Length: 311
Image 1 (cartoon, rainbow, N blue to C red):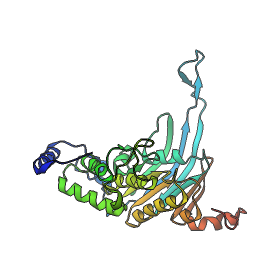
Image 2 (cartoon, rainbow, N blue to C red; image 1 turned 135 degrees about the vertical axis):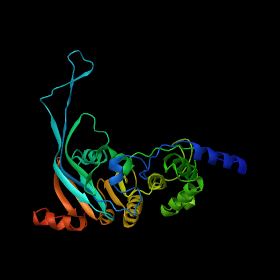
Image 3 (spheres, one colour; image 1 turned 30 degrees about the horizontal axis):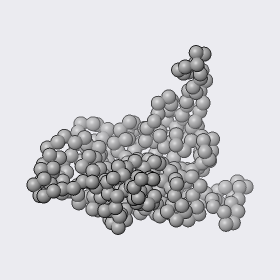
Image 4 (cartoon, rainbow, N blue to C red; image 1 turned 60 degrees about the vertical axis):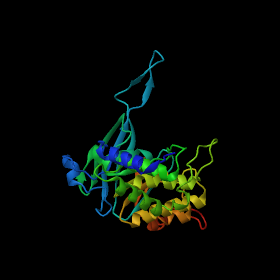
């Protein structure tokens, strides 16, 4: 646990952090990167529109070596994972990317975030406010993984303090970082558990699954991102906690952020919270638009959703 013993130790730690060259992981950029100078910073006051156009993704399948070790690739054989996928999400909107297993949800999220693209051939454009940012996307956005990674012996607040010291802009003072930690704790509804140990499954009792997911959001919200990506944020949660988590995302979007998340089989209550829906089927766009108009769209196509069924 992080403990400060006396004001001198605390001041010493503060001075050390102020003097240390901490990597600037936020997009409050003061460098010479021309791309980052043209794109809005990680301040939610700077609205971000994300669009992607004619995305095609191919993968080279692995083939066993004749010597039964290593891999070799058939350059003439490629599998297409995404086929001419386009879409857009604007500030204040919460977009759900849905589809059956293998439809391409995670692949599209990886393309949009420029992550895990090894062995993939990608065509098309991903634009932030009309600018092609390329691999700089990782510095312009926040990404909440499906699996939460924490140090279980830290409390909720200690974890956020640790994240603030490492990830927030190096020009911010210790006091400003701590003020931001308190703001995020309040914003994400973590006040009641801020002094509770995160916990380790099977060893140390800690916070609930819903609180852990909100803590994961809080760590990313620290840098006040205008653009957020979430991979299966309701995975492993019951219906009540799933509704609670998506409600948090809804509130974050209403603050002016642009939020995209993949989600699997949401309940009707959860589905209603999304503004837009991108439905993928075998790597193609089956629907892109207002989530509330999707049912009418498919009903006109002869695919009616039965009463009392989830969409």
